[in-house]
Structure formats: C-alpha cells, structure tokens
Image (cartoon, rainbow, N blue to C red; front, side, top):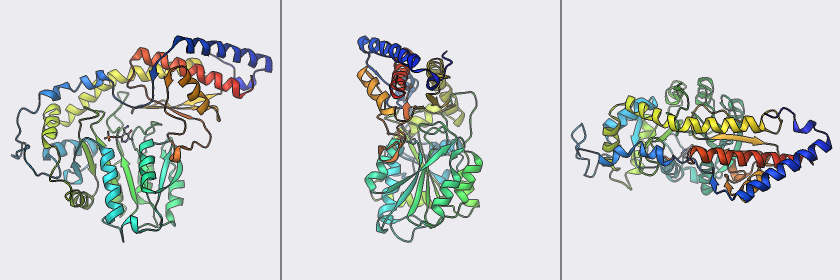
Length: 425
Ligand code: PMP
C-alpha cells in the first residue's frame, strides 16, 4: 500500500506520479469497460432469495378470516402489520402496510400535509408563505428531489458519526416556524451508513420547535440490513417523542424493497395512532385497500419476524463480500495518501467516498470516459450542490463481485489521477 502523502511529494515526484496514473488510466480506457456503481439495487442473486414468493400465497384468507381477494382492509393485512410492527419496534395500530414503495408513502404524507395539514397543524402546509426542511447531508437524492418538487426549501446540516448534528438542528428549528420538518435515515444512512444514536434521537424527538406541527420523516429503509453479525437496533423515536410531549412528530417509513423484491414488496408507514388514522383518512379518498394478496404472500413467506431476520442473513452473505472488496481496494490503493476518506458501513447499501475537495466531478467524468458509471456529482446534496465537490456515492450491491473489483480499481485510478492533476503534477 502507498505510504506517502501526495501533498508532500516534490514537484518532480508528483510529475512522475501523475505520469504513472495517466498511463494506468489510458490502459483503463483502452480496456473498454462497461460497469455501473450508481444505484443501490439488489442483485439478481439477492432477488432469487425471494423466489419462494412466486408460489404464494397458498390461501387467500388471512389468519383473521378476511378474504384477501376482495376490497377493504385499508391498513393492510393485520398479521403482516404485526410482524413488521415487532421488527420496527411499534405497536400494531402504529403501523400501516401498503403498496410496493415507501417513497410513494413519503410523497403521499407530504401531499396530505400540503393539502390538509397534519393532526397538529393550524393550517395546510401549502397555505404557509414558506415551508422549509432540514436535510442531513450527504443524504438520499430522492428525498431532496421530492422536496424540490413541492417547492420546499432545503437547509443542509452535517451528518456526524452519531446521526445528524443535533445542536445544529435544534438551533435552526427553535425559532423559525417555517421549518416544518426534517429527513432522517436513522439506521445505516444513505449514503454514509451512520446510525442515529439513542441520545441524538431523544434530542430530536424532544427539542422545542417553533412550528407546532414539525415532522421528522424517519425513513428506516435499512432497519434490518446489517452487514455484520451485529443487529444494530434503531432508536424508538415514536416512544421518545410521545414521552417528550410531541407524539405526532415522527412519521416512520420502511419497506421490503431490499428484503424481498424491490419492485414488488410491501411498504409501511407509521407513527402515533392519530398519525396512522390521519394517514388512512386521507388515503381512503383514493383507495379501498392495498394489495392484500401480496401482504399474505409475504406473511406466508416469512412466517415470523425471526423469518425476516434469517432471510436478511442470506442477503448479508451476498452483500458483505462486495463491501469488503470496496474497502480492500480503497485502502490498498488510496490509503495513506491524504487524498481520500471513506465510510466503513456496518449495514445498508452504500459507501460514501470523499475525494480531494474540488475533484469529485473530475473523478466522475474520468470514470465515465473509462466506461464506469458513478452517481452524478452532488447527487447526495440538496439542489445537487456539493459545496466542496468532494462526495461520491458508491453502490456495490448490484454488480457481481468481479465487477465490483473492476469498477473499484477503475475508481481508485480516477481518484489518483484527478488528485495528481489538482495538486499540479
Ligand atoms: N429511502 C431510502 C433511504 C432509500 O435508500 C431508498 C431506496 N434507495 C428508498 C427510501 C426507496 O424505498 P422504496 O423502494 O420502499 O420506495
């Protein structure tokens, strides 16, 4: 592994170094790669793990005697709600089971807040002169583009190793009533992998907010998606908020998109009983009930909450080697040079790579020209503006292990060349 900080090299050494990287890069381009590290999709092998679903359900009657083929049951199949309520640390009437996408539920909840207001709103959010949201960065690009679509102004706050910078959030929301909410991916955040600690969750659940109807969009997309044997538990934000006297502050989201099928799973939305009732009251105008046959299919497939955990172990067996390969290549090729840092996630779907400030877009451009697709620069920031042009999100789940090796080697070469260019070699 390299041992010299690049910035300490003499001009001649740096020029040498740059020439070496240019040669390596030219070879890469000549190899004509076609690789993709852009989206956090499950691989075909991961999807195969759930093919048992295709023979289910074996009955169309739910355990509590409902005909799943018919209309009704707006909250979803009771026993599936119970299964995921246990996994998510909620009571059954604090959780609703719906269609295939939790992102749709986020858009629904925002739409209802916008048009009608929440259980604790004085008026619809859309009637406010301005609505703003706190956005921990780097974060999930679709969270940000959704807010942009609503015209909700985004205020970035940094992620720390313990979750969002709680002091910064508390200071912002204390006396600004236009700040109506915040995003938070509490477990194995996209893209940084951090887990929000109990202390930070408590602070966010209890902090005074100028807006009476402040919401934490608690997107627990990776609640069960461990990459190690340690099953990190998510803080119980709904109880924390209730104890603090803000019971309707959290709205919880989750789905089986990365448990069963990304395109045919089950999504969940939860919070206080009142929040769930409010959600159904609004949803009910446009639906008489979700796909209960798919709910039953999932219920039979897993059997018990432990069945879900056991299933996640099989995902881990496929994913962990890919993440280990990303770590190996980054540390072997970029370690000790002082030009890059990266996350070491214990779960989730991403590695967040910070390259020399001012070079992320150049790295992505170089990679593209060499046939390696990376998420566009700035994607993990509101308005796609990475102020330091430093962050690159890596998603190693979809490519094969060989493809991860090939694409990460290419990424390392591009990072090295861009750094050499920047440092004037
Ligand atoms: N939230 C986060 C943080 C995600 O990373 C993703 C998927 N990349 C989603 C939500 C989308 O979830 P779903 O498939 O349930 O819409």
